[in-house]
Length: 168
Image (cartoon, rainbow, N blue to C red; front, side):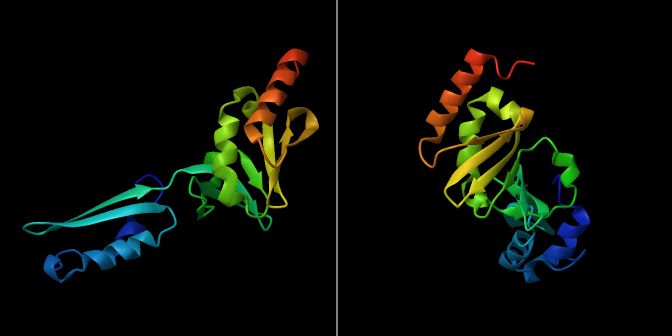
């Protein structure tokens, strides 16, 4: 694990040293560990004669999400993660707006195809639960349409190239 402290995993699992492994419910351990926000999936198995193997897969943050004036990390599935250590992820895009966590995956997927725009992004706002505004360097707000996001970004990219807009 990278983000979940081992102590938290042990405490949350309910497992105790030198416990009888046959008295431990694998499903209970799995369910308890899945309650941790950073944990995406868990595998728990008995390893005879006397061990329990626990494997976890952690969530990977893809954006910083501002919700109710607080910053949170957001993963690809739209799961809001705890905001401890958010400073370690200052390279992630900042996303704002009600419902943005449900659609940010598509937005970032399209944005990734346009690295010049992606590098200029300061933050993106999901407006009216239907479309995006991007605040880019130089203080400009780009109001993207509700549909055909990729096409709109392609046009922006072409215009920016023609005008040398993203050149320093």
